Amino acid sequence: MLKDEYEELRKTVEAFARDVVAPVIGDYYEREEFPYDIVRQMAAMGLFGLPFPEEYGGMGGDYFALCLALEELARVDSSVAITLEAAVSLGAMPIYRFGTGEQRAHWLPRLASGAELGAFGLTEPGGGTDVPGGMRTTAVLDGDEWVINGSKAFITNSGTDITSVVGVAALTGEREISTILVPAGTPGFTVSKKYSKVGWNASDTRELSFSDCRVPAANLLGERGRGYAQFLQTLDEGRIAIAALSVGLAQGCVDECLKYVRERRAFGNPIGHYQAIQFKVADMEARAHTARLAYYHAAERMLAGAPFKKEAAIAKLVSSNAAMDNARDATQVFGGYGFMNEFPVGRFYRDAKILEIGEGTSEVQRMLIARQLGLADL
Image 1 (tube, rainbow, N blue to C red):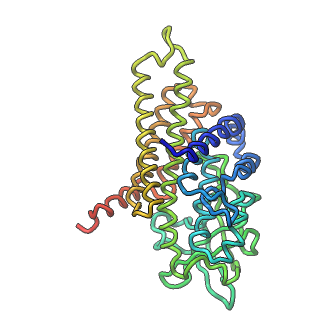
Image 2 (cartoon, helix red, strand yellow):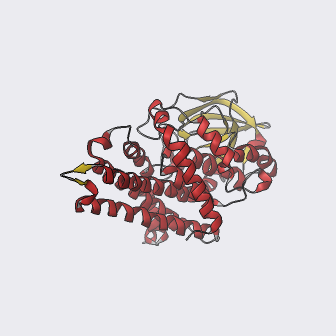
Image 3 (cartoon, rainbow, N blue to C red):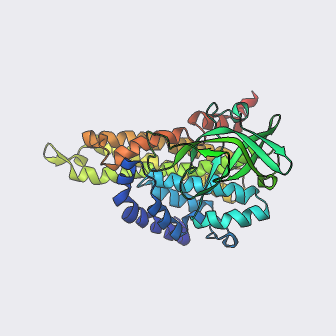
């Protein structure tokens, strides 16, 4: 059972998702349009500041509070949920974890308010899981400025009207990766048109390019040469957040099926009367429940200061599998209607696959779990 403050937050976001997001998000999704009005309302609720201290304009909560909000949003729509997750976990959190006092004071109040969004530029067009080996973007120190050249791919929140800063991972020396904060609108920083995507169609995802892009030397985030290590720490936390989002999608599939199987009739009965449907929905609920326990456990260890790399990987693996399996089963329960975009389960099906890829593929999660079990040393 959740503590009272967590349960109150969960119920508040649940009501917001049901009453504000659900009625309109399908239209945004079909138009592939970023939902600025929804984001403004999320900002007014304080969702973008959930895990940050009040001194930086945050709500004084913690990472688990963010995860609860992500789960409830994703029960209705993943585009809105990933916008929040990327803005907080990838955009603002590295500044909070690794930034100087000046960087925190400058950026965090704006990002925590939700008036502006941050992004993180790591993945490159020719790279993926092999970040160090695939890194081609460079940053050379020229006097008191970094000169950045290269490109990034699949960067969430990087091209909205309210995006203000992107943390860019770049080679700052031989086998040396650092992170540099690049404000939006900096000369030499170009944002491409948005991708045409299979899912998450109401979120912003773009390719970025840098051509002799100059920013102050003071924009270095954390220690020089520690950019990759910083990102790995950020990613461990982010896996718990993505797990929460995945659980939300998995539970949303259950929610939609429970309504539909009571309304849809076949052979004289609601289809929920038939054991074949009952078993399918029961399996879906079991997956969502199990995955939720996994991310709760990982978050508990993280907040307690205990090692949580293995638990985060397990949570991400189990929950993304649950999301994909539940989306497939929900589409089957809905039959032909599940293939129509006007029904949420069709949108859920399109959104689920990326959860097995983004912020570490399922194969990477298995590799991390095996390493934590000591198998890599055999």
